[in-house]
Length: 275
Ligand SMILES: NC(=O)c1ccc[n+]([C@@H]2O[C@H](COP(=O)([O-])OP(=O)(O)OC[C@H]3O[C@@H](n4cnc5c(N)ncnc54)[C@H](OP(=O)(O)O)[C@@H]3O)[C@@H](O)[C@H]2O)c1
Image 1: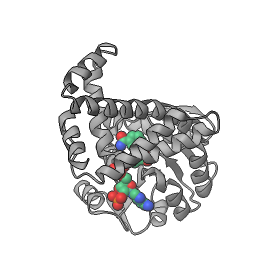
Image 2: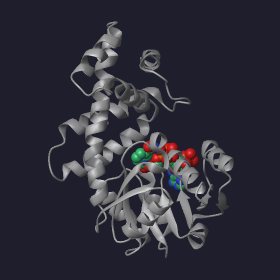
Image 3: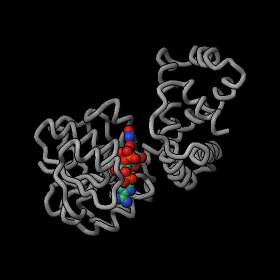
Image 4: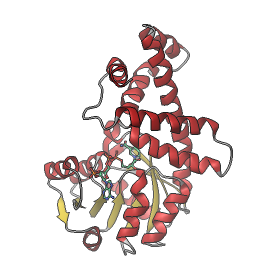
């Protein structure tokens, strides 16, 4: 099996590492990519193509794992292909349909990653829908965990968007309220008492949500734009709009971070410095 990745960041490099361990050949194209992406691909020794179109001629399946705002653009640049095309990006159903229509019809898959690839690796659960979802799920034979949930592009990303509205909304609330608690000198206590109303490992999860929200603020704001877009077609998304604005402000304030904070206190120190 030969798999090509468009984008070679956290998702692509993590899945690629797992797949290479079971003899899947991995391809990517580094034209125009950052030092970080080049370094990730170089360290893993993946096969390089001079363009994504050239890559499409060499592989059985292409997985798009770029930033959400680029999902349509990379599909447009690729154009129609014969192999299977899977969009793994956190985008709304309408965005994923637009992207998939640009590359084909019967050969496309809307796929949504349910969780953190860094934590789960190749075993991260992925929900898939669309005409070629069953072909994509053949990667389960190589250690992936893909659930096919339906035949239509947009079904998988709709589930992902609902989940994002919830998880990113909770992350924004935690960051906002516990930063205020930090200013008042009671952040550890506040987290402890919030945790008592939640599940046993809530404290650990809450810290992980806050550290990654700061580190991935730009991506979170792009994802929330997609959530608001989708929810707007069904309801008035007051809460999700507030989360979107929260992550946009966080992105403006923090900019690009070199390293992920390792605990809640580092998150607040960083925010203190930028006030
Ligand atoms: N990480 C997760 O656990 C997770 C979970 C669920 C869903 N997702 C979704 O999966 C996608 C990828 O996430 P990630 O964590 O891998 O992000 P990431 O680490 O930021 O990597 C994004 C990759 O896409 C590349 N890229 C950006 N624009 C591109 C373009 N126009 N053409 C080609 N490559 C481009 C980036 O290259 P440069 O370095 O040059 O910018 C980078 O290699 C996102 O849509 C995200 O929402 C991620």
